[in-house]
Image (cartoon, rainbow, N blue to C red; front, side, top):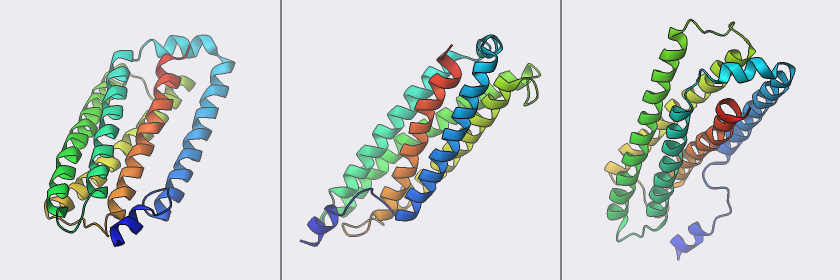
Length: 199
């Protein structure tokens, strides 16, 4: 009976504090997106020409990676939500497996971005090159840090599943970390077409 009550808790899931952080982060990125769009209107040709230097292939691969990682995180959350007092160890193991896949995706994203940054900076490009690259470095660099933090959060959750730390009446921290990861995914889904695709 207790489990049923917990699973009917009002959403959004996780701690209320994480949603304040998520809303602040979304507003911050929204302002940067608006700044990018406004600046682009003032010099479309320069923005389009600068975009051609970026690797759309890397962007597409990273988009697929993050969407896939969110799927794995959803599967992990479902595992802990389906726990009972009798099978919580089994479901912790299931969640652990899905989190491992999600972390591999997160690390893969970071490696691809580091390679991309290396290529861009290797061309002598920096924040002062032009407005496009100023926004590119700010947006993708800021997002990179979020993916790094999100991967660390997933690792901490993973560590707890390995000791069967989540119980039927105690997995709010799991949902909190998952909510943060989905925010990171959502930001990239907007950032990728805006910076890499739209002409």
